[in-house]
Structure formats: structure tokens, C-alpha cells
Image (cartoon, rainbow, N blue to C red):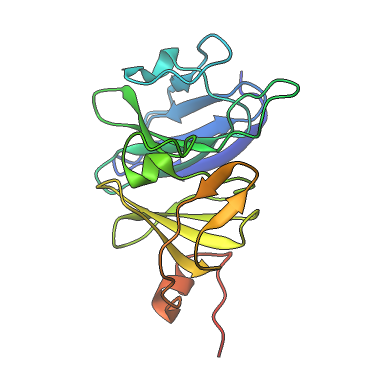
Length: 193
């Protein structure tokens, strides 16, 4: 059965995707009512990409968003064991081929795209804009980050400059003020008037 549904989103094909908080899984309800596992359920505890999504490990409290082209974006914490430094959230993409791939979040160690090098924590939502960017509010740095499908990362609103948290550095570049049109798309956004 279904266990603690957490977030949900509709796919362009009409099916409904939802995450299960306690299982670290993503399920799909097709338009004819069939429920299948889409992602998650793999062995604990590492982040392994470039494998079938149904065999991937997803940490609890997975958030999801679905792009117009049908790609599914999953954001979750990384498992951390006692005494280890904090680890960034990760965003992973599952395309039409069913393979899960790294998209954003990581150790800021200079490997991968700017999005994959971005360290961010305490994020409560993930949304895709009409301009095909993924927006994530980041509580620890008081920022709204945007990740492009091409791998770019930028601050849409919030603090500027390099934001240091422990030994990890959050990717930052100049802030542009949030527009009213952008704010209308997101329940967490506000506009100063």
C-alpha cells in the first residue's frame, strides 16, 4: 500500500507522481489507476547515479518537480553519520529512459557543473518555472537559487557574494531582484513594493 505520501506533481501525460516520506520512494499513478514504483528503494545509503531510478537509494523526505518535457527532478538529503560534516541536498534527474542522474548539489569540490558544485541545505520546496529553471528556497543562506537545465546555478533573491557554511562554499553570483511575474509562480515568494 501507500505509506505517508509527502509531495506530489502531475506529469504531462496525465499521471500523478508522489513521494513516500517513510520509504524514500517515488510512485506513479497512471491515468488508468495503476500504481507503480518509479524511483527509490535501492540499498542504503550512498548516492549512486547513472543507474535505473527504481534501484536508486533516495533518502526520506524526497521533494519532486516535473518539467514540461516529462523529466522528473528529485531533491533529497544525503545520509550523514555521526561526526561527519553536513552534506548538501542533492537534486537528481530521471529522464524518459528511467536512468537517475546527478543534477545539482554536492560537495563544492570543483567537480561537475556549477549546479553540481552548489552546496545548499534546509530547502523546503522545488519548483520549475515557465522559463525552465528549477527554483529552490535555501533556508541556511536565506537565498532563492535557480538551476538551469544546462547546469548553471545563480541566486535569484537573497544574500550576495560567497556564502560560507562550515568548510563548504555556496555558489553565488550577483542577485537580480525577484520580478512580480516570478513571484506569482511560487507560494513561498514575496515581492517588496
